[in-house]
View 1: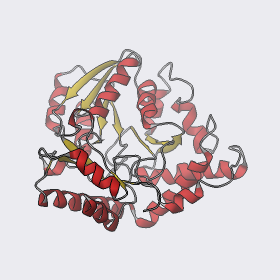
View 2 (view 1 turned 60 degrees about the vertical axis):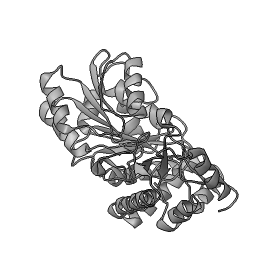
View 3 (view 1 turned 45 degrees about the vertical axis):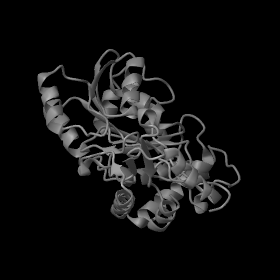
View 4 (view 1 turned 180 degrees about the vertical axis):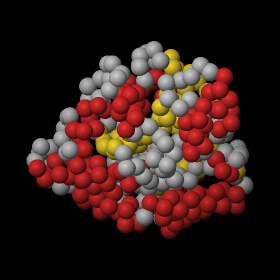
Length: 355
């Protein structure tokens, strides 16, 4: 296991030694021609990750900054945003929208449930029409994955001018995501989840129509002005100095993901979920998410049913692992297993055996 606890938390997740070695490289200037070419190459390799033929890039920032960037670029000040909320990170995006001076509306479901596309369609039919609909594809705090293709289709049918904006922080590279086929406008993630790298870079895809909308929105900010950032970064010259070693690690990881095959990677995550939930059932635990279709393939949230979660965490630590003890109001009541990134069956089974 080495001298650090192996991470089975919902991010940051475990980073393979091969990738850590890349980040030990001597530093290179961010305007060096070699690095300029690397940045452009990373942007090109991000497009198949999102399954888009449109625009993809990155910035040195957390995913939360990209929540704000989406609001400031794609929603005029004072316009309405509709937020599908079923946990802590949906609430965060709603709070950010309000803090940016937008008319933020919460469309909530109870914890552990996904949104119903028909209920969303009914909300959009009765109005008022939002300028953007903000969806958390995979709610990390509860382990719920949304029926994103169907939700996006509801928006396109009933509010065709609304931007479809999606937090894919714990789904990108771990769960099925088809940016172009599902007609999304904005999707973003951080490197520390299913990409299995340290935190530090925010990666994103943005549609052509979203960039056209952004060009009409005032006060987009500076660093995260997509109208400027997208063309500059895709040419290899981001506005500000990026985290050079992490960009090189991302380039290599994107090659590794391509070699594994995106659909194979999605399948591996579903298999890790099945192993985790089978282990839970054998020990009298139940999934926090009742609807099987809504159970995340990257984060399993498990109802402890009164068991001592602290004792489980101590057992994990003694065996060289770090586990999660529940988020927010679920702390101590439900624990989460972050089986995302580069974890395989053997490592997961060793962790579960320790518990």
